[in-house]
Length: 118
Image (cartoon, rainbow, N blue to C red):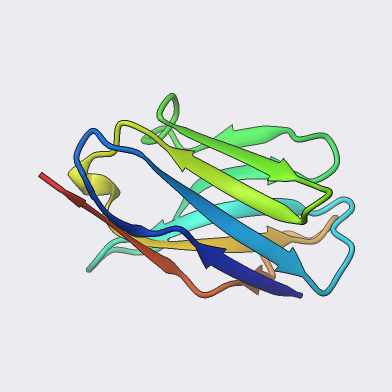
């Protein structure tokens, strides 16, 4: 399994960015796709997830209402639309996947840096 995240960059507070994650090397039926982030000096934290089959989503409280996760099964892509960005959203964002039946995210991509300036 390979995950390749892209779309990070520098944006002003209040702005928007869309992150993309290309998943390859496997059929992702029954997988859960997730986005995590790690800010400088902090532990990695969950941001959002989507189930590959049904598109069921979940969000961290800190991003609910501002971020939207989605997937395009035909393209093997997962997206994270981030609106109303805040300086505290600055972090390296990682795409990850959890196989069906697994208790944890098993595969991780390299991160993409999002910097939100005031």
